[in-house]
Structures are given as structure tokens and as C-alpha cells.
Length: 406
Image 1 (cartoon, one colour):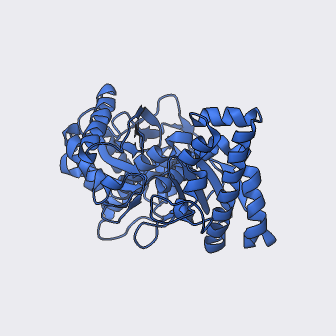
Image 2 (cartoon, helix red, strand yellow):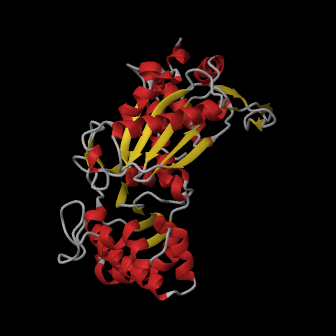
């Protein structure tokens, strides 16, 4: 898991809280480490590291790593490294899609403990009933993993719309009935029985934003720090990362790429505008335009060279390139990551997309924009949601893991 690290040990104030976070974050990022190496990486004394490790072991969060002894350079004797153990906290990530619910449970290292994806049409009925159904799905997943009481420290929720700083849905053109709801806390209200009580972390974000974090932290892309992940399901969005940090704008609306106009005289969009990218490159436009039933069928038809499928993807790639060039010119990002359904369709979208970038993106004059295919596929947003919870806990473990402070 690649997360921003705290740079140096605290010297006053919340000393122990801060330094405990340093230790846990190093173990989450680097894996098993000898105590001496933990001391070197964090800048803490070996005695302090030993005290923290003992407290973490007593709480069941850290354990010795059997069979992984390493040599201590100064003495040459093998030392038993420690690692996050079977009692380490886990986070639940949930993605509420337009026509599905997915969930995962992950360890602080990013390891997936359990995963599910269930078809579910969120456009019909009362959104509160849909939340209750999603909560049942999540509770079933957690129960199947036989986790100990209190292991779940938080819930992260990815949603296809603009999410305000207060966690409420501000705009969801494809799920308008959900506007104003706090979906994260709505789910958490159903899941309080998981055992973490009021200490449960709740994070809610736009699905493209959290997919970008998922690719950043878990996609194993070398040197990926400044990029925009362009993702699509029913809608189209962009998660923007600058300097390794997510950029969401003043109100959480940054990256609404699907509602950038690519043709002022184009068809009407559900957002109230006309000629939006979503009308050319969203899931509905692609399937209706190609006459295929799903993305797998569209990809197969295009691979066979069927004219209708090839044509709709060429049009989508061109529209996507027009919108992406505007994004690149505004933000100067050097990399575009194709996620969601675009990852599967990348072989057919990349050509027309790159052609538009070549014409329209100013930075092409000295440094062409690099196109990268996302590696996590449909798991990116839900894993990013869970990772965001772990990041919060690792920043302040004493609040969410008070047992380790005694």
C-alpha cells in the first residue's frame, strides 16, 4: 500500500499517538521489518520501538514473522522481524454503482481478505431500501470471513456522483433520487453491529476519485504520482491525483469529466446540459450505439472488426480525447489512466484518443501525455475506498485502536 508517510517522529504533544502511527505505517507499507530497521526508518530509538512492538503484540495487531529472520548489519546475528498480524484491523470498502453493489474487506497492507459484486438496480425504489440491501450484502461478506469483534475499523463508500465534504450526495445525474443522502453514514447505521461502535471510520467519495486512489496505492504502477484516471460505467468521471494526493476541488466536484461538453449541439444529457461526453462514451451510449448487450460483447465485436462496434468506439475515443485534452491543458497532468470499462476497451479507444491529444493537448509540444491502462479493473474504486479508511486509521491509530495505548 503506497500512502503518504509521516516524515519524522514527534517530539512533544501527542508524541506516542504520532509515533505509533509511524510504526504501523512502516509495517503496512514495507511488510515484515526487524526492530532495528523499524528504528532506522522511523528515527525512533530501539527501546521505543521495542515498547511499541510489545504493546502491538499484546493487542494482537503485530506478530513475529516466522521463518523470516534477517541479519542485523552491525552484529551479524539473525533478528526476528515483525509484521502486521491476524488481529490487525480491517476496513470495508463499498461501491454503490448504478446497477451493482460491490464490497471488499482489506488489511492495512492492502491485501484483499474478501470480495463480492452483486447486480442491483439502484435507480428504482427508495434509496434507503437500497442502502439496507447493500448493508445486508456487506454484513454477509463480513460474517463469512469470521472476523473477531472490533476488527472492522471503518467503512469507505464510493458513489457515482458529486460528494460534498460533509459526505452528502450533492449531484448524481444517474441516481437523482439519492441527492442529499449521506450514504456512508446510512450504511454505517446498519453496520454498527460489526463491533466497532462509534469508533467506526466513515469515508465517502466519488467513485472515480477512489478508483484513482486504488490504482495509486495498489495498482503497482511505477512512479505514478501526477495523473488523471478516466473511468466509466454508466457515467464518466476523472479522479485527479497531483503530487500523490487526490484533488477534489473546493466542493468535491472536480473531475466531472462526463459532463464536459464535447459538442454544444449534441444530444440532451441527464445533467440538464447538451452534448456531454457521457452521451458519447458512457456505458449506455456504447451499448445502444453498438447493439451489444454488455462490454464483453462490445469488445468481442470490435475485435472481430464488426463495423457498428468499431464505429461507436472510434466516436467514443474521439470524444474522450477532446474532453481529456481539456483536462490535460487545465491541470498539466502527464499521465492518463484508462479505468472502469475503458480499461477493457483500451485497445480500441487508445488510437482515436491519442490522436485528439496530439492535436489538442499543449504539453504534447514538449512531453506527450502517456496513456496507461488501469490494472485493478472493477476493483479499483472499492479498494480505494477501503484504503482511504486505512489511511485515516494509520494517521491516528490511537483514536481507532485505543487498546494499544493502554
